[in-house]
Image 1: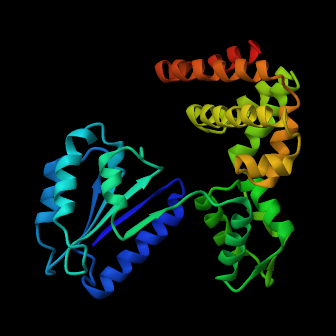
Image 2: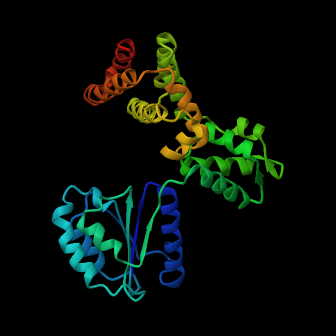
Image 3: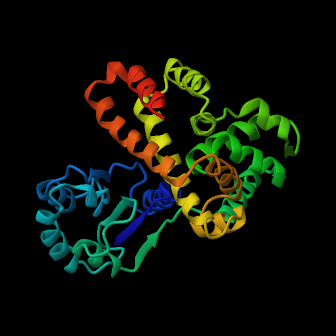
Length: 317
């Protein structure tokens, strides 16, 4: 059987794959000895055919997961042979279970992508829209026979963001901590640690208000607490990229609900980002974005000077 899962939401894709693995173990391989993972980013044709042509351990078939094959730098040299192999498969339960899992969306013009899309079990896992995240949180909490209010959900999202991996981890902590049937705001404030993302918002605010001393102080705290400099930079780049999009959109419609709908942002994030965008001109945003991109190369070449480079960048604003 051939499965093809792709999309930005790796959490739900992983859950789907785990469910298939459990079903395979129940029906075919109780001990899980015939499960195999292939790193698609570095795999060769030899790796692939060695996996699919060898027998399972005490079983007639195997379950093989090929992750991120489209990120392989030699994909053009692999795809013809992979497509030819796939074309010979009957796609039935009598054959090996092959799961092609891509985090992100491949180029739709790619030949292997087109071939995999023709199989029966194909699913794209897009990031959940804002209203669906709220529903997802409620359902996750209900699995533990507890409830959570909309206000508590908004507070949780403001601390954690929309990443389902992080949300799942925090929900697990909350349901084990809370002594009442409903998770309260106090539970969230006591247990949930605000992510670096929230601190990035504060840093961006400080930069927007031209408060360089505060911006430098916030940045120094992040670095001193052990947060990776490239991670901080990636979050800043991401935030300013969103700010540019919001700024451009708000020139036509200055409304947070419209921003959330058009740019697929959570309403809370859209409101907060729209407020931040008003602190800048579009030219300022583009200048800062370019400075951040220039900083990326410097950090990779001379990591020990990270604090100096960040300070120089902020002082150029």
